[in-house]
Image (cartoon, rainbow, N blue to C red):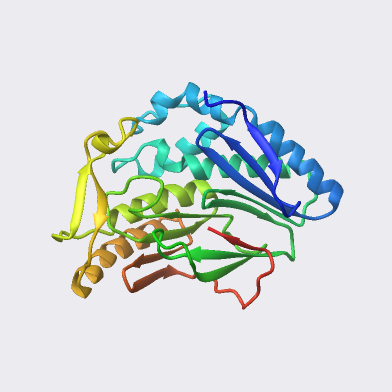
Length: 292
């Protein structure tokens, strides 16, 4: 185990930073001082055994699901399996939902018995959030994980279904079979968004001499992908190749949306962007903005 869980308020005195091994969370909340303080205490308490619970079941979490489904003991692992189960027809392990599931679980801890206006858990770009009636939240979206600048802002309200957002791409934290610069998914929770973003990004793909791939286990001996080929570099792609790759990703996103797994998606490759579903654009306001 990597040390002990750490927690501190960030310099703004408003956001809470929680860190333990590979898990790095930034948490925020709006409401009365009393409710925020209680939510942060509940978050710190819940965070104490999140990583240890995952490590205890890690071997199974790195294995593709089969029927009948495996029933994990830990709450985060259960969220991971639930999010991945609908996609068991393709190669995917519960680890594809780990970041989103951690965010969802921490959000549940924060909101238990609370009366917050809003709160959110940002797990390195995979975000779970809560909104009370009448509240809104704006999120800045990054379209290229190599150059993390805000490419657009989406705004969510209480009456929308979306409560989770996740981004995946070949240059992100996890390995990808595809070449997407970024695929951002909106879904009913962050775990669903996480696995869907991974799968859609995998499908944004094309054969091109400028693309370099290597077996995953040559890059990371701790990977759950074995010797499957993952993208390590993407050079200059022509417009036709970009369109072909994005077409495949759009097909995957539309299939997931029709199945009720996602609400919307934004796919970015090179200078081209595709939208699937209703991505709610925000007004030019900096209020409550979170960068994914």
